[in-house]
Image (cartoon, rainbow, N blue to C red; front, side, top):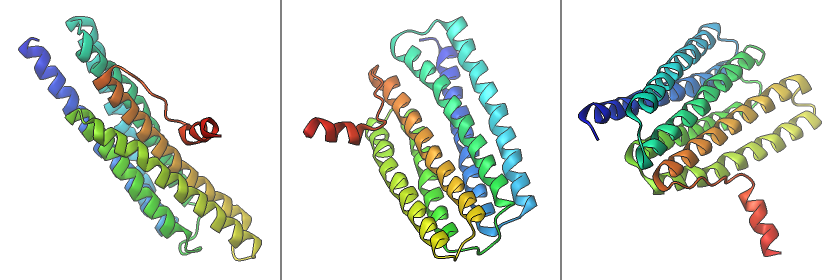
Length: 227
């Protein structure tokens, strides 16, 4: 491997860490926007961060394609660059979904109910998953990949609990249906962000092992095998 290629790979790691930090910022800001409700300045910050994510995605794609076309990597290096291209696509979607959450916050009044606190906890979990999935890539850490994938169950459980709580509040007349649907969509977006973090971890796993495992619905499939 040439020194130039090594420097370019290091640059790729730096750029991915930067993109990951933008995703973390977008998720955290969108969670705050939901908590505070109708904070246009905060929503604007999320939209600006989403634009930064889009720009950084294009820069990383250009770097990856340049490495593929001019350096002709093989084996592990080729998998690493290919995985990075897949990862940035998921990270771009994370930015879009954070922006969608921020947009929903404009229609939700502050202190509507206790659910936003649960959603904030869910947001913290997804931020951690995104951060750890990027760390796993940089450190080539399979154990960290598995941790991210396993933590998706926590986010999924949180979504189901929020869904049940919203249903109870709506049926009990303590929450209007429109606000309930907006909050449900917010929780669903966070759940999807968790799924994207899992996708990133799976591609990291591929970059290390050469195998890509789709963990979606794995628990259900395992139950079917056991019966």
